[in-house]
Image 1 (cartoon, one colour):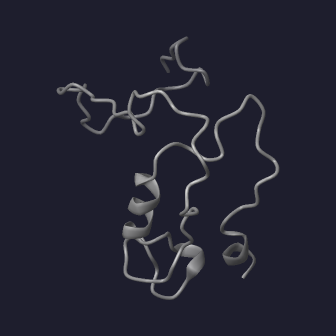
Image 2 (cartoon, rainbow, N blue to C red):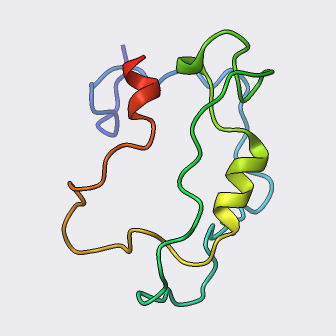
Length: 105
């Protein structure tokens, strides 16, 4: 049994099943861009969209618990300028979960 000091369990490495090293450049995307955030922007009119029942893969036709928001509602929410609440040094413990009613149901 040959082990390696590089494996934390001191056991054999997991098999790679034919996996090869990366052959293409891995591109990283910035979701919100590189523009500075403006802390003076007012709260956006659209709140975080709630999950709805619907067709797969983003929704489940029978269960809210296994669903997400509609793609259109999510895109409209993401198009709004800025972030709200604005990121702060400390965690936000005041705002309620927008999916609270769906979770409790």
